[in-house]
Length: 130
Image (cartoon, rainbow, N blue to C red; front, top):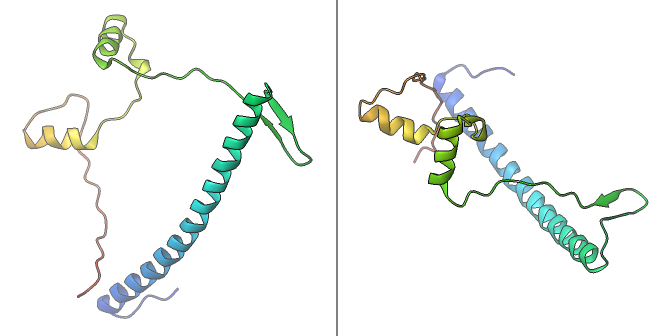
């Protein structure tokens, strides 16, 4: 791809290219959403049928479907959970990530968070000219 000779032409070409891409993405996203809805309806039908017929699975000519069960956490009392984590040094129960919003709020309040350093992410902003 050749880049335009001037910055203005490059900006305009970038904007036009982005418009084409987003239009294509919207079209594809609509089709994807329609397929997801169809999948969800079929999954619901299978769940209902498996439950009604007391089945854990079944198979077709091209695929097999089965129910799997997995125990997952559902926190009902965060304060009690935090107390447990502190008491038992069980921090592995939490995912390791810092909230960007909460971090920026503390930075604005001149609070120092040990073990964390600020990183400035630079992005290109592009808006339609009016």
